[in-house]
Image (cartoon, rainbow, N blue to C red; front, side, top):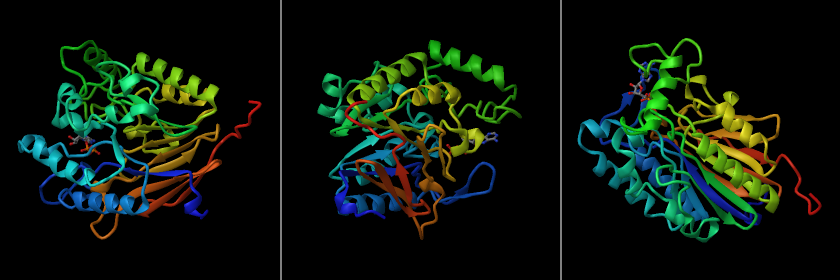
Length: 331
Ligand SMILES: Nc1ncnc2c1ncn2[C@@H]1O[C@H](COP(=O)(O)OP(=O)(O)O)[C@@H](O)[C@H]1O
């Protein structure tokens, strides 16, 4: 691997910590063990590593605490436990929201919680004060270093779990879900288009338009853009059940902009990776919750002029992520 000291900057990535103060269990299909209590210890190790590495920022890719906390009236306590570890980071931590955020909290309470990191975008954002794109859409962008831009997406913008039952977007999501899924239990996937389950969601037209505008500006400025979302959007980078509902629309926006270099998501605890024909790399990060206490699952990404190097820890693999296109002054 290239000399890491020469990197322009570096950042940490971690997904699906899903902490709960309960004994180990299994995933729904009974195929993977879940280490609910130990997951916070793996997070602690990751933060310690990033402190030593002196990363510029950390991106938490969603599902910070597990839905089990809700029924045990332990959501706030579990969130405090996880946040205590993130607070040990001297670098800013940016939080993406996943399905388990919505099992524990309403959208309004998330907006008012420590999981709303939009204020940390600061001067790097194009918007004064780094506002969200709308009062109720948790998506924002910022520049972690000159010529680089990070975009955090809200994959539960149109969803049943992420929207109040009385809202238009909830109705819209329910109509879409029931059109594709006729099961009585909407968490049970249909035979085809398995992604149409209640624990997934999608991006509104408003969010797609905003992303398109951010990427247009980034193209003009010749920036390199990395996009983060809880749900994966590339069928080759994940199990089909884990995809965002309207992943094709999101992919079309990414493919239309030469500034986009990497897309990073969580949700699929087994992880995944592919490179789109456009050259954009899609990384689905392994979930901490299904990671044995003896190992780990997180990444430290070293950013260079022409590529990023993902240095994986434990079951996360190392990857060389070459940028798809040269950027030249004449472009
Ligand atoms: N095949 C399925 N049929 C019915 N319910 C399911 C199925 N798979 C998952 N679920 C339920 O959907 C929710 C989310 O699934 P889970 O595996 O916990 O997601 P995550 O990977 O985000 O933790 C849970 O309440 C789980 O019990």
